[in-house]
Length: 224
Image (cartoon, rainbow, N blue to C red; front, side):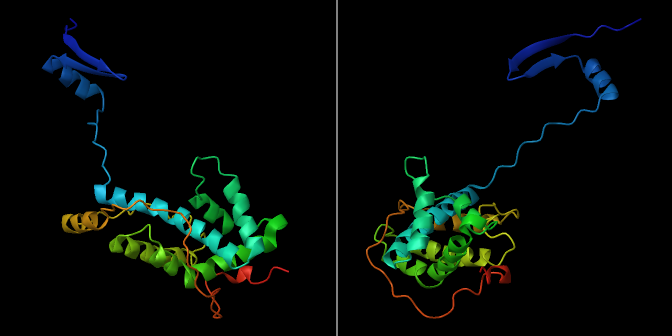
């Protein structure tokens, strides 16, 4: 004879149901079905989210400074290349994006080959000699700890150039969990009160003669 079991639906929400069932029915379900408890999603620590938000501001800030620097230095082809990208932006703020930098160091477009590679060279020159000055003299970044974070970001931008696919993983969150103490310290450090600005600066640094192109792969050294 088949046994009767009772249950009661307590709540329905978003395709899920909370029910109250007999314990015997629960035993039957466990016997015939494999049920895994729902695991709570791991939340990214707040300090890492703050770091990620700051990371997203790095490329728009420095690419905007790069464009103005190229204009002031008279690099017409580079300036035109960057302004063509900038004019295509549909957002209200018209900011550069990480994708623009990835595309610059991605596949070489045969139609714009010379300009693209020249822009790569000038980007490296900018990072080597001008980017830090842009941060130091920018009066919209008043907090010194914030300035230091931008200056450190320059080294991160340079390090990306040594990779096979520069800037491809630039916004990736760190996978390793950090200790509570380090998270607290980092949270304090990343309490950024200033509004990061992409506005151009007033002062311009001199151009140096040293070769800044050592980061590029040999594949880009010849483009006749």
